Length: 284
Image 1: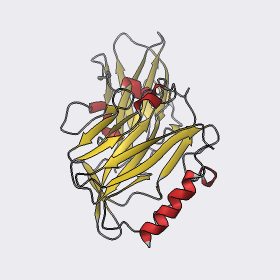
Image 2 (image 1 turned 180 degrees about the horizontal axis):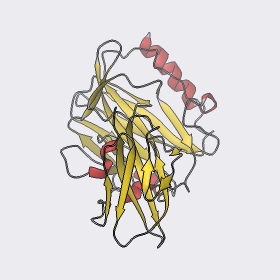
Image 3 (image 1 turned 120 degrees about the horizontal axis):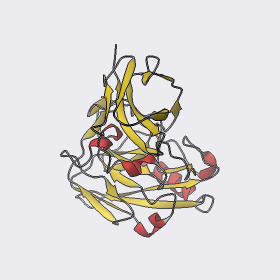
């Protein structure tokens, strides 16, 4: 019955495929040959939550079965722990994000949860679609977004740029969560990004030796120490890409009112250069 309901929902979704501006399929297959397909894309009229008009249906009330299954979900990106209790509020087979290709803020990120996978798993997509301006910096990984600034320096897999290859393999995943049924499901992360999103700097950024931000983590204040640089503006983003209200006085930033979690600090200098840093608001 659960499988029948999912098939009906997927058929309902398919009737909407022409209504969004661009979409692509992720085909995920585990070692037993069991496959599941997810749909992601963008449209100017979409939101980053559940859009019924684009055929998005919340299937979280349907428990996971005994077979391999993949779902698109939201996630608590402020918690960088490798195993947490269920942080999701919705599960989808299809998600269309709002088209926002010119933003220089944090890009759109979705979690992909995997129930009952037999590793290794392979993920396939049509790389030609990622020549699109709004998607050309998109990637998939099992790195939590809070670790993207440290990518390639650990044992986790990816990020794999979707424009450069058409499939990849994961021999395991690093992050998981525990469902209300006390089952453990694994998590991947997919980022849909244009060339303007600041993840384009993630691969090259290393905190400059001329810039020190202390203390980090912090409960309240961040002191920005500079050599031969002058700050014109400071911006801070959360993991939803939302810019936070922040003030700076004498190169000191107050984040005491921020919720605990990981944020991205953007420093804009008077010479036009920009630097991004990961900062952590610690628990009192």
